Length: 364
Image (tube, rainbow, N blue to C red; front, top):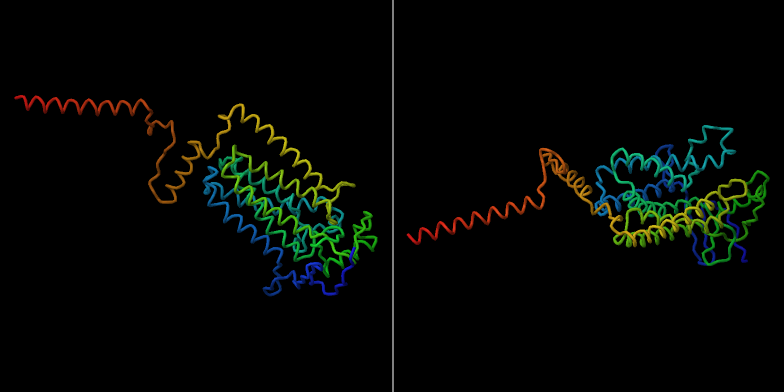
């Protein structure tokens, strides 16, 4: 394994075998005494791009975007709280002496799985309240997740965190903060790596786990976005997301040096394995069920209920008079096929009578 140069500048990041070197301060700029971090900017950018992609395409999934916006806002809040709570729970020893530090997220400490769980719990609760179908909403939401994850992971690059074990690969990276972190974590008894017996050396390059996950999420987004136009049932894109992300995270988590632990078990790696198995199992089950009874797997976007809700929302946005287009109302009954048949018959009888009258006049 090739040794790398010692880097004194904490803001310097290097990919030795590629000949790339960057100098990036985690603080993007300051407003007075307030420091704006690149990490927060990149997460926000990922969120904005996800919203810009998903909202115009909700109609394709049968979702009324006016109703869904509340679920999205709630999901964002739930995601932030969940990401922090997940991290704190599995690092409780760092916070039990100073509870106030739980609310200080400026130094990092957000877990992606916690964010996903929190966003889904709050978002789906609001979906139920706002009467938004959950499975189609999950399908479009996970496409947004992949965009957000693909972009947001570059915040780990700027902070020089979420890296892996030593490697001699072409993409191996090092940096001032990485080397300082490894020297501390592996040398001092209070360091997590020292206590867990992990051997990762600052003298060698490490796996850029952030890069692996970012590229995988972007690739996953492209594949699932294309497949979404051909999805066979509501919830299929969601299940595919769980399988794709679960598989990637299982292997990448095994490389990382900062995994959240439960005893000797990497929490995120275990959860990834469970999600992958559940995803594959359910997809196989639904595949055979759909083959036996395809009529039970009708996409919500193709239902009358979906069309009615979207049409009502469109009329409201355009300022058109409120009009109840739902079926079953006493004051607004819909015509059935027999009604239209009767109308056609009456028209034909009227036309015949007119022709007979004209003929009688000519005979006279």
